[in-house]
Image (cartoon, rainbow, N blue to C red; front, side):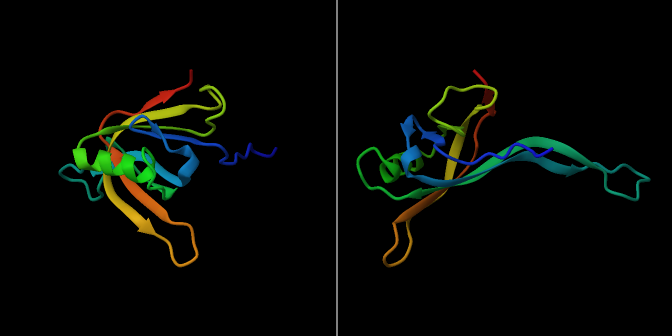
Length: 140
């Protein structure tokens, strides 16, 4: 039986209350755990255990220097050196549900690349993020 394959189309990406969905070209979102070693005396093998939850990623954009768009939103968030709310769901045109869950998390922004691309190409930008709070998984 074939599995259900899904395509990114119309994803919703809201950063610090600004909907940047129409400029996002891709997002890499990684969730997991810090892996810790927990050996005891007499063990001859490191025993792995899960530590704290981790979340990080990168958002890539078509760059826009318009008011309240990509550059203005990210520069303002980076300048505060604080956390901002990131909200992502696979389809922004439909309600949040079990088949269209929304992830919400406070993040800190890391590296911002405001200028990318080459001659004749669309201007691009990217920003990295890491969790600054617990991840919420909303289905309604």
